[in-house]
Length: 123
Image (cartoon, rainbow, N blue to C red; front, top):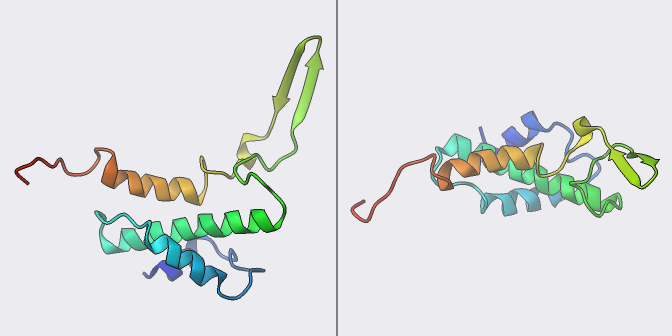
């Protein structure tokens, strides 16, 4: 599958409401973040995940969200004396710890954090 096909399958409707050319821009940038050590199909999948992350950041920016990694649910705050506790729905978290960035990072980490081949000066 091509990166565009992966993007359409994994994130249907992500380009809805964006100006023409923005998806191509994101795919172009994501091409440079594709892990080289992976087979071509996994490189294409990683590219699609990174493009989806860029598109989500773009949409959040247009919506006025300055930190797209912040919880998207309302925050509940309780105060008792000097102690203040804040709660948020962890299922609503959509930043780098979850979603397309985390999927891209998992694929990227295969190449660079010891999960792949061990290389020495002898090759």
